[in-house]
Length: 308
Image 1 (spheres, rainbow, N blue to C red):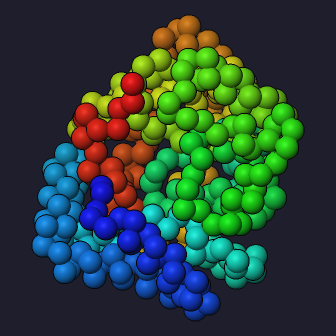
Image 2: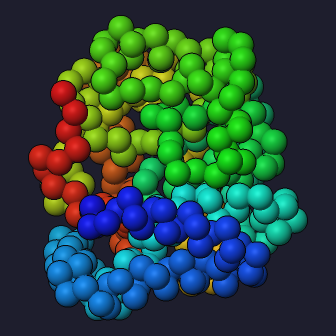
Image 3: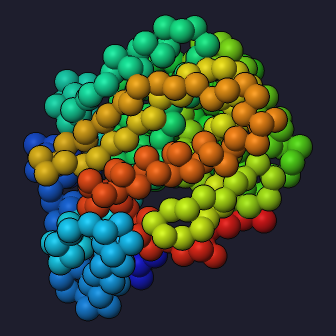
């Protein structure tokens, strides 16, 4: 969802972050959320848009949600989502550790122990860049497979600069790339997995053209990239789904799910659509449980975000 004055807002947030990160971090997180909730209360059209989107999703998912309460909290979490991991920039490991609540780490470590690398399958739910931030701080051998993220911390940006055939800069992809670029990027990502590293990519990327499949999501028919399925089947690397929600305690709750494998003949057997729908179904369940972490999902339309 685009709001008016987006660039002004980003500049304001970057400026205020320089000061509020010296507060207790949970307090700082609450202040950022408060800015979003204040904007929600002051702007009638914004308030109406959130309430309509939450109300529609409640009907689609058949949930017993308090629309007014969830709408306001979602507006606050929108601000935290857009600041990515910048709240933790320049923060010591000791201070940063207090902001994370981790569950399922044993699933991630067991997947890595298989020796085939690991696909860490994320989404745009909650504080979606914070699992990568935490993995960097824990010294996991991590590479991102996505468009180069902007508005992230200098801590994370420094890890984008590396050299060699497995360097991070060669793994960033572009929506403007053609089929040859896509094939080359998949080969590079496969090498990362064969080297036993972690590959962090999203399973909810809306796309069109080759390597896509349709799926039902929040009552809409959308087309999603199947790149993660191609990589999982080619490499036989285990897949670990991760979610990171912003909790009522203003901390980042990261949850690693048990690993699974995509069959190496999934494409030949026409199973890519099944795997796309499976992931979107699991994501819907997270939204049912934690609608205030749904970010932009409730505002998606069937024609928006498709790329030729």
